[in-house]
Length: 179
Length: 207
Image 1 (tube, each protein chain N blue to C red):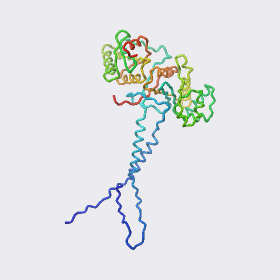
Image 2: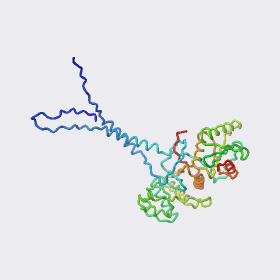
Image 3: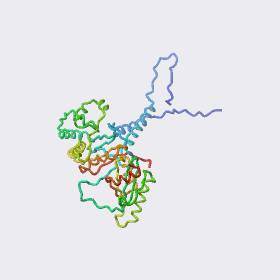
Image 4: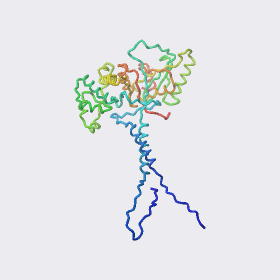
């Protein structure tokens, strides 16, 4: 590329015809370019394609005696409906009407943080944290399920459980057109 | 007027050392790179903010998408003995060649009764063939007798025997999949007291 030809050039007149001594230097610029291009490709392909694992621990169904009674006033039940809709209520079912929410920063995340603070303030003792019960309906998608678990991770909710949905709760979702 | 002549220097830089370094790095990346394997079942994994990577060894992946279930187990040695065990269980005699072929397939979704035909296909035909998925339980009554349950169960036994480790499970679900489909898989795992498993997600940095 940028190598200047510094060799003498053609021979003198009348002298012997000598073959030109070729330089042993090879221009490596293109080769380096190619090598770095490939390096870039491999860096991108290896680090970006790594899937992430969200570890989940589920209650043991075979042991019946480990189920602790949950104080209903500390629970927040999150129902997952169709079309990425969420409804949640605090306390025992049927006592308070559910709030319709959505997966945004100011939606469910804000509600989770606010309710958590509220419950911690109104309850005393060591165990005053909020327990979130996630109930996924048959119309909800796997994405919603992962999203809600992720929101719980983000908001740092200490305790959550995935519970099967009950018919009255499906009725709640139906009433708001989310089932 | 005499001018001071600045001697012209060659603009060429010696690239040899740079080339050496570049290729050294390239070799390193090629050797460490784990090539992305083509999944027989394409799923769109939901995003989350979790930053923990999926482990590479003693890992089984259950892929759920488009109503189909696929099963994948890491490690060729594990897959070999897994097929032997499954063959015993369903009284299908697999030849050593078939076991060898099976050990090279990281993820599959074929019922046991058509597995022999599937393994006989050439590599190209395998790609063209749409795998029907492993029969998953239809309801809570046939969980223990379902093929998926047995694949998972035998895979755990094989890992325990060969590697002396507890097999870890990951569910790779399509984000549009309805929750009950995933719930079924969770039920299968919980039925054999696998209460700790991972959900595979992609990294979401947007939030």
